[in-house]
Length: 141
Image (cartoon, rainbow, N blue to C red; front, side, top):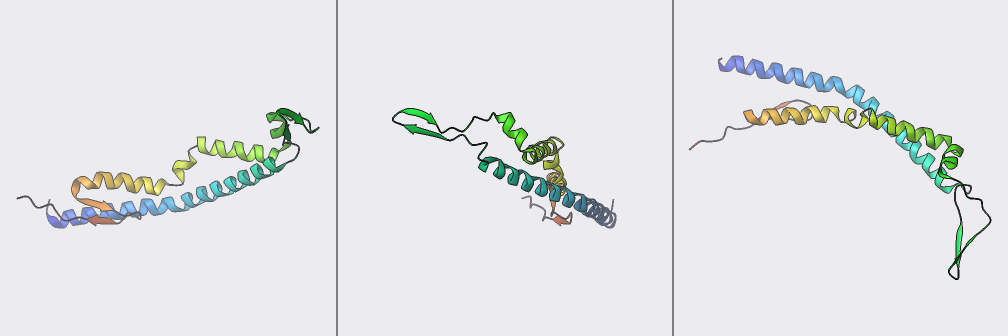
């Protein structure tokens, strides 16, 4: 294979890699927005759940004895039942992680990293957009 054919092959590979990474960007952006929205909902629900006076059990320690201040104890599951926004958003967040959202939000970076690993054997690399970076050949003495 002559150098002209090699250059054309490299250009075709670069075009295909940049096209593939570019096509992943819209879906990745949507997954990132979904993760941000569900995370904010979970954090907001957690804050409301934690500051709810019905959920809190106030205990005073007086002279080595524990004295409850008249508030009834609420079980963990009852507390979750009383806060459906937090419960649903937390279950949704856990479900998204089980579905692999942590991989989908960084998919272009994973593809670029794997390509870098393979291209390193040929004294090449690529950036996060898929553009090839040719490295100088090592000098053999």
